[in-house]
Image: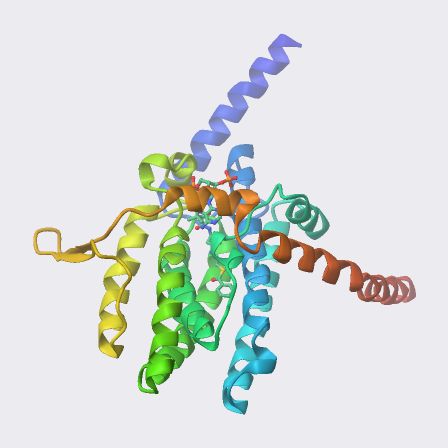
Length: 319
Ligand code: BYC
C-alpha cells in the first residue's frame, strides 16, 4: 500500500511539474488536461463568484427599467441587463467544465458559501446611479477583465474576450448618462455628483483587498490565473477615471486624491476596509434583499427548468 502511495505521489509531482512548465510557457489549460486540485478549486471559486456577480448585478439595474427617462434609455438599459445575464451564462458554463454543476453553484450562492461582488449590495436610488453603475462599476470590471483575458484557463479566458467587448459598450452607456446629466439642470448635476459620491469608494473595493492582504494572490500568480495584482488594477482604474470625471465636471469624493509626479499615478486616500469586510460578509445595505430576490425568482422559475428537462428527455428518448 505504501509503495503504491509513493508511486502515486511521485507521479503527481511529475504531473505538477509538467503542468507548471506549461503554464509558465503561456499555454492555455483546457478542461480535459490534468490540473492540480488546488488550481481547479481556485478557478471554481473565482469563476462561480464572477458568474454570480453578473447575475446579481442585474438587480440594481433592473430596478430602473420601468422608470428609465426615455424610450431610448429604456431600450439601452434592457439590452445591457440582458448582456449581463448572458455573461453569467458563459461563466457558469466555463465553471461547469471544471466539474461543478450549475445547481451546486446556485446552492452555494443561496447558502452564502459563494460570494458575489461587494458592489451589488448597494441600492440604485436615482437614475444617475444607472450612469454611475455603467461608468464606474462596468469601468472597474473592464480593467479587471481585460487582464483576465490572458488568464491561464482556456474557457475562462475565452469568455472574458467576449465579455470585454460588451462591457466597453456598457461603460460608454454609463458615461453618456453622467455626461448628459452634467449638461442638465443644477438638480441633475447634483444628482450625478451624489451618485458619484456613493459609488466611487465601493467601486475601488471591487478590486479586492490590498496585495499584502490578498490570501489567494500567491496561487493566482503562480498559475497565471491573475496577471496583475488587485492594487495594480485599482490604480489603473483610478488613473483613467479621474480624467474622465474632469472632462464632464464631476468631483472625485477623495480629499487625498492628487497627481504624483514621481510615480506618474494618482495618490488616493485609504479605503474603508471595515465597510468592505462587512459588505462581503453579508452585512451590506442590500445583501438580504439581493439573495432573497434571487432565491424567490429561482423557485418561481422551477417549472421552466422542469419543462425544459422533460422536453430534452423526450427528444433524447426518440433519437
Ligand atoms: N467582492 O485573495 P483575494 C460586472 C474576496 S460583474 C466580494 O484578493 P482573489 C457587472 C475574495 O473572494 C463583474 N468579495 O481574492 C455586472 C476572497 O474571499 P473568499 C465582477 C471579494 O480571488 C452587472 C477574499 O475577498 N467581476 O461587471 O485573488 C452589472 C480575499 O480576496 C471582492 C469579477 O467577479 C469583491 N470585490 O481576488 C454591472 C472579477 N474582492 O473567496 C457590472 C473576477 C475580494 O476566499 N474576480 N473578495 O471567501 C476576480 O478577479 C478576483 O476574484 C478578485 C479577488 C479580484 C475579485
